[in-house]
Amino acid sequence: MEVKFTPWRFTYIVSPKPADCIFCKAAAQHNDVLNHILHRGKTTFVILNRYPYNNGHLMVVPYRHIADLDTLTTDELSEIAEATRHAVTVLSRTMNPSGFNIGLNLGQVAGAGIADHLHVHVVPRWQGDTNFVGVIADTRLIPQSLEDTWTSLHTQW
Image (cartoon, rainbow, N blue to C red; front, side, top):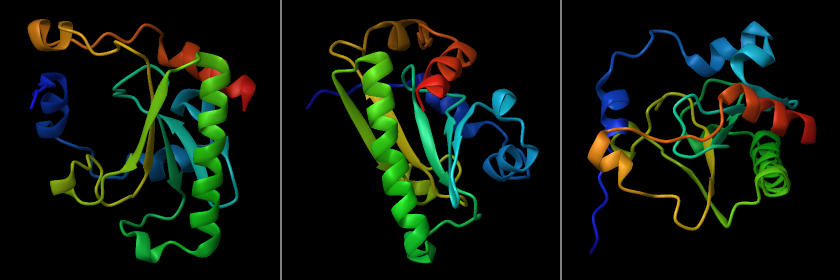
């Protein structure tokens, strides 16, 4: 088994987190450009990840502050699935990735950086997008700013 180390994530994992929920705060501010919110639906919204694994890494988030899948309503679950599907379409059209990682980290031990507010990660992937820089230089290369990524994806949404 090959092991890949991601030291840039550890800094985020052990850093102090704000007392208030970043998702609830972003949704309540109604400043979508500042908060990199790509889309607002009836029960969910789509936001770029400020600490992306790859360019275009976004999250689909319910407005309600909930941690468990069991507490999602049928409407929320349906809208999360629809927004996730649409995110793949938009990312495919604008960034032409080779594939995607899509998933939830439920609970802190499962890797959830924000365990109290569930969210679906959509991460575009390209052939060869992992490299030595993260391991050697403790640096992650993201070739486009969040602002430029937001503009590109938002216009296609």
